[in-house]
Image 1: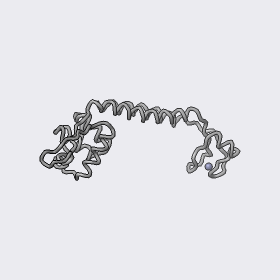
Image 2: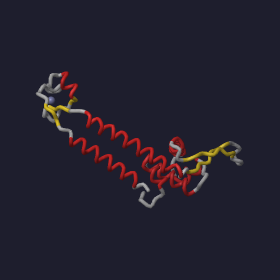
Image 3: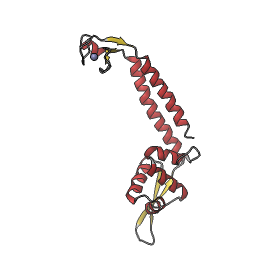
Image 4: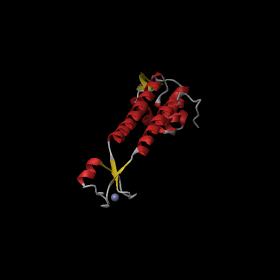
Length: 171
Ligand SMILES: [Zn+2]
């Protein structure tokens, strides 16, 4: 399987789509400018699967396709090539998207007070919702109390840190 000595292009492909992506990525690295069919025969994957993976990687700008005429068959085929220079850029983007989302959650936690009735089955409610319901739980009707959300805040901060470390380990 995949290890940390594997090329970053292969590792990021595997992270995007799993085993099929891993196989296609390895094949692309081994034989530059291969066609769909050549990749299919070298990986043992069905041609439709190979194309699906290639179009996805192409859409993510991780590979490029060159349209060339197949002299033998007389029609045009695509020859695919990795864009390994784009891998770092792609990872940076993903990292930014995920940490932005987590940061938004953390900001939300920081900006809001939450109320809870103490009943494990009931969700917590925001101050606005608690006020609307006269500080009675909208689910069970018990009295709502201010709930410290330090735990959630810590959890989000921790996730953000982990995310940053995880993404750095790709290189
Ligand atoms: Zn309740």
